[in-house]
Length: 442
Image (cartoon, rainbow, N blue to C red; front, side, top):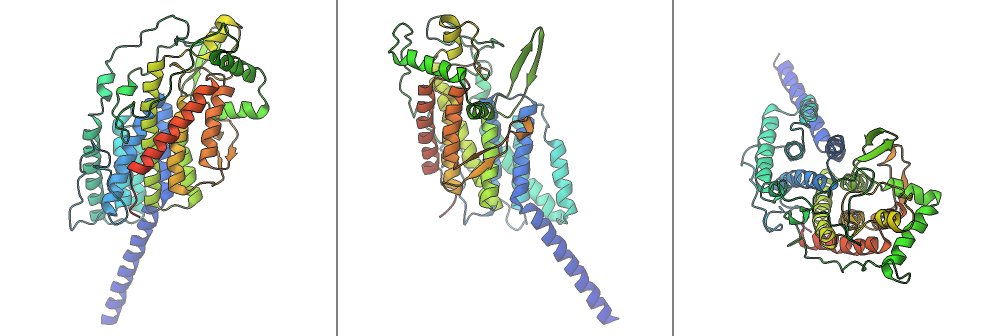
């Protein structure tokens, strides 16, 4: 009898240890983080967040997740508090309480993702599914509750910090004043929408000291009378490219279109189609990089976080330049002076032309992903297949960023010079993020 009880107790311990291993296999899997980011990406798409606001959604959610990881693995990861000069110290885990930091990281991401998107609670269903998945894998109830409690503490601290980034103030700031003067931006067809987020350059950045820290040169002077002027040549280059697109150039323009809200007009009927915005596209690429590198959970979270910071700061810098330059779009000039029936291949977005946002943010994100996963890593990006656009393959993240930049010329919405300078600016921003923010302890 005694022997039977010993064997029974041993079997119970073995079963418990197996269940313990099961739940850690689930929470340690970086694919779970990639799926969680994708869920937020889907919510951003479904609710039509403009690209700049989407970058804010991603950055705070990823930082919340990262801070939990840094707290759980202080030997290998540094908190961003203090590295981002205005970021306060984050709550420390309570001693003696066992926490699954990967699970807590996922929950912090979701908590903040819920708070910075609308309708509020968009991720609640996913969070319930996540919790049930972890329970079913056998996480002990005490660890489960401790992990939830710590994730909530960190997420609340991140949200409190986020409220001081000037976002709320810009919601009631003055609208853009349209001045109908040669060379200045005016609304474009078919929406003729008002200028998008003219005060985004006033949002508090993360790694940048200010929106103007990395300046761009003045755009070429408007001149359509001198055929040798830089401006005239840039206009005609765009028109020539759009009028003679190859199949590959067409695919390139469509692949990097990333129009979160395209208005389709057929006769008197109007309807919108949605896709991931540029920040969402690069979040997907971060996931591809993580999977390709076979990165572990913590490395994956750190890579997403650094890329999201680069995207956020790149948009702030770019929008500052855009509304300082107020440059006219190619469509406006070509319709007025060359061909009233000309249309770009992709829809012109509602904000000034110079510099190219895609060029800036793509180059910035590519630099951080190169730092995280290495250079010259070929990959295939299938992010757009869910929208019916075939995948494209690239030699590296930097190669993809260069293509994203040039795609805006083929799309007919940017001048080549704005894309080239945008790429240079983005590289500088990505370099600054890599140098200033040391996430991993080497």
